[in-house]
Amino acid sequence: MKISVVIATFNRRELLRQLLDSLFVQDIGPAQVEIIVVVDGSTDGTLEMLEGLDAPCRLKVFAQDNAGQAAARNLGWRAASGSVVLFLDDDLECPADLLADHLRSHGKSDNRVVFGRIETRMSGRRSLARELLSRNLRTWEQRMAASMELRWPEDAYVATNCSVARRLLELSGGFDPAFYRALEDHELGLRLWAQGAKFVYAPGAVVRHAYQKSTLTAVEDELWYGRAEVLLGQKHPELREHSLLAEIARMKWWRRTVLRLLASYPALAQLLLGVPIDLVERFPAWGLPTAIGARLLGVWMLATRLAGAVQELGGWSTFDSAYARRLVVLMYHHVGPGKPGTYPDLTVSAESFERQISALAKRGYRGITPADYLAWRLGQRRLKKRVTMVTFDDGYSDIAEHALPVLAKHGFGCCVFIVTSQIGGTNTWDEAKGSGTHHLLSADQIAEWQAQHVEFGGHSRTHASLPDLETDELHDEVTGCRADLARLTGFQPVAFAYPYGDVDAEVEAAVRKTFPLAFSTAEGVNYLCTNPQLLYRTMVMPGDSGPTVVLRVMLGYSPWDVILKWRAALVRPVRKLVHRLIGRT
Image (cartoon, rainbow, N blue to C red; front, side, top):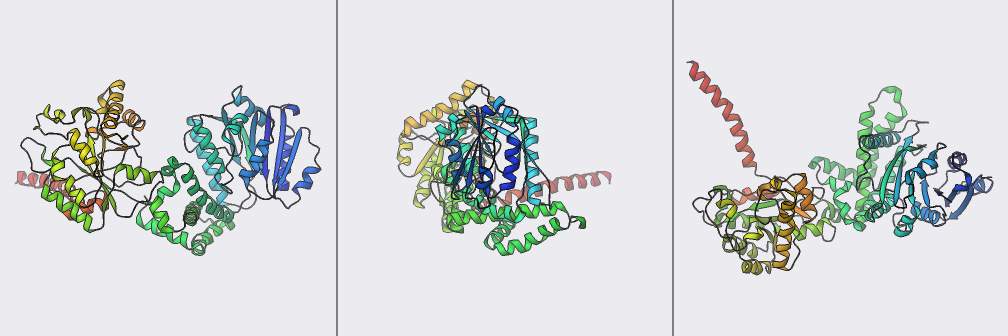
C-alpha cells in the first residue's frame, strides 16, 4: 500500500459522496490506494451511504461520537497502512491525478510533508467569507509562485490536501485533541517542523473546495480560533510573538478601543458590522462596495477571535498582561560629572539621573531586566502595566557610583552591556578616535552588582562595528562575548546591544543564534510582536528632566526632540528666504 487517504466528516453526506467518486477514479492502481473515512458523530445518514458503496479500492469506515477533527484524523491515520497519508476535507473535489502528484512529490523520502493547492469553487449565494478565503489562497499561491520556499511559522501546517510520511506521524504522535475545533493542523505542523521534516509545495496537486459556510458561521468559528491561539502560544511559546493577538497591542489606541468594545458586546458587533455585510451579500445588484464589506468582515472576525482569546484567558486583565504589554527601554552611557574630551551627549549628571528615576518611581513605574522581559515574551510570567527597562552601554565604572545605587534604592532592575575584552580596562574604541579615557567596570564590581538585581549583557568583545567584520571575526565578537560573560557571572546572558547600533541581516542572524534578545539604538515602543533582535531604545539626553524621561517612557521618544527637529526644519527655509530678500534689497 502506497497512499492512505484520511477523511474526517461531519454531516456532509452529499459532498462526501462527490469527493469519494473523484477518488475512485484516480490514475494510480486501486491496489495502491486506501481510503479511510471517520464519521465524527454525523446524523445525516452518512454511515448508511458509506455502507452501500461498492468501492474499487480498499475503503475503511470508522464511526465515533463527535470529538472534533483532531481526534477523527488520529483515528484515521493510525488505522492506515500506506507509507504516505493524505488528509482531505469532506467538501473537496479531486482531479484524477491528485494522488499520483502527492506520491511523486514524496519520491523515496520518508521525511516529507507535501502541500497541495486549493482552489475555492464559487457557487450559490454570494459569501464575503468565501471571497476572503479565496483571496488569501491566491495571495499565498502568488508568494509560492515567486519563491517555492515554505516559511516558518506561516507554512507549518498539516491541513487539507496535505500528505505526510506515515513515519513522521508515528514519531510526532499525530494531532493534539486539545485543539478541538481549530489550529490542530498548525500545532502538528509546528512539531513536525521542529523535528526536521521537509515541507514541500506541490503546485500540481490541486483540489477544488466547495466552501459552503455562511459568513456568520465563519465569524462564529473565529471564537474557537481565538481560544486555540492562546493554547497554541502556551504549548509553543516561540510562536507568541507571531500571534495575531500580539498585533492588537500595536494598533492605534482608537482602533484598540473599538475592537475591545466589539469583542465585549457581540450583539453590537453583529448590528454594526453584520447588517451592512449582509446587505452587500444579499443585494450585489445594488452596487454596494465589496471592499467596504470585506473590511468590515475582517474587523468582525478579528473582534470575535479576540473575544475567544479573552474567554480562554479568563478576562481582559489577564489578556492584557499576557499579550498587550508595551515596553520602552531607556539607554544611558555615563552617569556622573562630565570629563574633558568626552562626547557631551553621552553623560547624564548624577543629579539629573536621580530626578529621572524618582519621577518614574513616583508614577508607579518599575524597572525590569531583559530576563524578566524574555520570560514574559515566552509566556512564563506576567508583566505589570507600568514597567520600563534601564540599560547602560559599555559598562563605565561611573555608573557603579552614581547610577546603580539610585536604581537599587527605588527597586529598579536594569541591564549593563559589557565590552568583555576590556573588563576593568578603558574605552579603547573611543580613545582611538581622540576621546578622553574612562575606566570600565571591573570583574569584582560586576559580581557585586549582579547580586543586587543588575543584569549584564553582551556588547561584543572589542566594541567593533559588526557589519564591517568578516564572518569568523563576527562569530568571535558575538559568541566569544557570550562565553566571556558566562564564565564571569556563572549565568548565560540573554541580551545583546549592537555597538554603535550598527546591524545588518548577517549581524542580526549571528546574534539571533547566540542571544534571544538584542537591542538597537532606534527609538520606539516594544510590543510582543516586535522583532526580539531589533528591540527599540530611546537615549536619555543630558538636559532631560524627570517629566521628560516620563514622557520618553510613555511615548518611546521625547516630544521635545521632535519639536526641535520640526523647528529646525521650519527655521532653515525661512532663514534662507530672509537672506534672499535682504540680498535683493
